[in-house]
Image 1: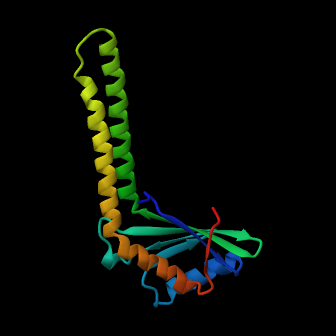
Image 2 (image 1 turned 90 degrees about the horizontal axis):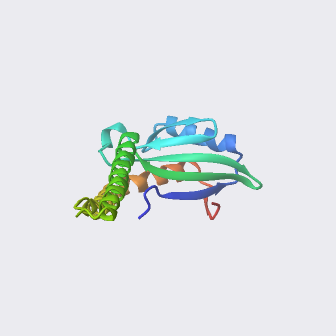
Length: 164
């Protein structure tokens, strides 16, 4: 499981043409997704009527290449969900580091330290948050497939790429 899955595609079209095709597809009324297009990138989202807490979005960064265009695609949760998980990971990490330092200082001073027990508790909290994020990603998997398909529907000449 990747926290923010990514993939790369190639198109024979120029970057501006790729963005124009995506914009036209989104405005055509045939698209199964919503989105916005701006200079050098597009953001594809699940339609408002289908959004749930774990709904993903697909960011597509468009870059010129020798033989057309490379699309760097990144799935991520909605910004509020992403921010919440970053805050949870930061809080757990901070708690773990403070508990480790505090506990080691007490231990060095010969004081019986129960604070060190917070270190494995913080690790367990981090693993728990990671598992919850994975569960949420599984709940949004069908929508990830749909967003990826929207991109292929907008640009029929897309090919998988190994570009990193």
